[in-house]
Image (cartoon, rainbow, N blue to C red; front, side, top):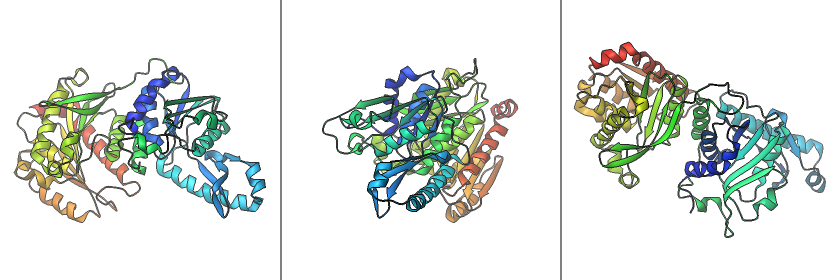
Length: 444
């Protein structure tokens, strides 16, 4: 095992790619597993992030062999030799391509939400995956990038077989890999956590990258990058891993309280955080529990413990140079929402606003009447049990509060457009209550 997870692999891979920093590059992650790796590479290089959607064209009645591949913008790469050997007719080729094109376009809509892919003309395309086995997908991605006009193609992966350069050397101008073991037989073997990357995490990675300005030669001179750093958040004797993002000129910072055992890598919370960053708000995502504590499910529902971690993190945040004098808000999800409200009820905590997504405010119990921060409760219209719990909890709040119901949404807001609605609601609530006037009033 070499890597804790894909994010860890991306950060370590980025160290081998420093020579590309500042050049006109686009980082292209291969869905699904390559996108979290590419996100960390793009962050380290100050480069834009996009996905490289590739669909293999399998031979009819024997789909495993590839007779070509297609990409966005009508790009197609056909292996004429395979087509000829397999005796595939033009009509059969067209039928396979039409079917795969439909799937590709569906994925593009889901991941980008209608945005156009980034242009590659005369730029460096940095193709990133979480590893290479046979290399067919990576090879196709490199060919697609070149067909889209990339002046140079670099393929970078954390781990690959020792002979990978022989297999892929002709398809990229540069190959970069951290580890090339001889006893290679599966990419997942080299990760402690190789759990499946879901669509929400891909969308969150892209949204997060959109919130960051780039520092290549297409960036206007003097365009400042937001403060975005990994941090050890102090909570009593513990140091909890976190990520602090502070855009220039921000009015305040939103601290995220994850629920149901989620971590700072929660794709849904990262999606919301990216939307807040684009609105000029800072964010702090951190792990409320240590890895050892996470093994005990009772800790996930220990509202008092989670709230103490949140108040400790708030104290730590106020000591950071980039947070001096800024308003602080809480965004809580599921059980994390109870912790956010519990912490917000602490005397002298001075929280500007609280937003709950699919939360369990009922778990904050008798603390609810003591909350003074304006509170927004967001619940899915089809999340009937939690909706009832939120209505009961709302009746116990004495602060300014609202209950927003997102039509058609279930508990995790997995339905198309529902998480975007959550982000819009949260952004509006925080920006309304983190103005200097609102922040001053909250301190009185």
